[in-house]
Structure formats: C-alpha cells, structure tokens
Image 1 (cartoon, each protein chain N blue to C red):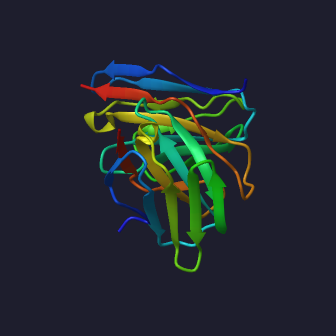
Image 2 (cartoon, rainbow over the protein chains, first blue to last red):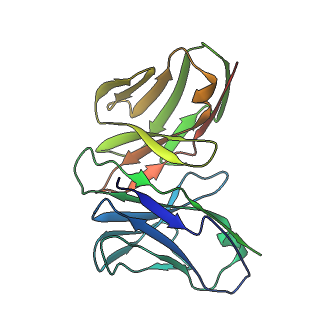
Length: 114
Length: 108
C-alpha cells in the first residue's frame, strides 16, 4: 500500500547542530509539505514543493530549508537548531491542485532542541 | 485574528450525545477540510467540501460559503471519537491554513 513515512519519529539534539528530518512518500504525489505543530497554534506551513526541483517558503520558513531531488522525498533541514524549533513536525503530500485534493499526513517527528 | 477560528477549544461530552464543532474563516476559499488527530498524533482527513453537506457514518459536515462558516457534527458520540478535530481552508493552490483544533473528550 502507498504510504508516507517520516524518520526519525523522535529526535533530541543540541542548540546549534544541523538536523535533517526525512519524509518519504510512495503515492507518487507531486505536492509535498512540511508543517510544525505547537500548542496555541494550528499546523503552520514551513516549506512546500509542487514537484522535483521546486521549493517554496511557507509562513514560518526562517531557519529551515528543503530540497526536492526526486518525487518521493522532501527532507527538512534545520541549519542550526534553536530551542524555538522544538516542536512536532508533520510531512504531507497531495496529488495535484484539483478542487478536492486531499493531503495525506505522515506520522510526525517529535524534535526536542536542548 | 487568525484566518481560521474554531470553537469550542475543548469539549467534553457523555457517550451518546450529539456534538457540534464550529469553524469560521475570514478569507475566500476553494475548499474546506475537516481533519481528525488521534491521541497518538496521526492526522487523517475526514471531509473536504466546498458547498452544502457531506455525511460519513455518524459524522456530518456542513458549510455556508456566504457566512464563511462550517460545522462538524457527530451523532451518537462514542469514547473512540475522542480526538482533536481540525478545520483547514484552502485559499490558493494546494496550501492549507489550519485552525488550532478542538479537543473532544467523550466519556463512557
């Protein structure tokens, strides 16, 4: 069955370290998204991609980067982790831009920056 | 003010009760989504709608485009319905803007 996976599921790191969170989908979807979820906020968009070599900034992109070298993967990199980046991160994918375009979410990665 | 507002933030009900969760938004949209986040953290899509009403089992979602308002109803609620329910709107392309969610607890 097609799916979307994230790794690691849990990560503890130190301030200043570079961290990469992986997202892999087997739906062959064009669109991929990274969100963070924090208490007091809804899911907020970090970066998104509409296809290979396409990347775009979301509303909370500072301190994060992504690259899309193939259809299946959109890794999220924290260049220099900060305590404010402690959060739960969700990756999602969708097929296209159709009216009833459903997003499928990964299981999430809980990141703690000490 | 957030573009997507949900109410209530928290809701506790007894098993069997009829439940309503509300979502108001302030922008023009092409579609509205209702999502469910389980206690373990997984997020699944329940409904996508742009007009009228949709029903799936005990869940009903309605939307009023003119009033920029949507409701999610759960009939004959059950403890397994306990979860966070999230409203999200799609204004441009495939990007979603999310409400903060409503924590529902259904007691036996």
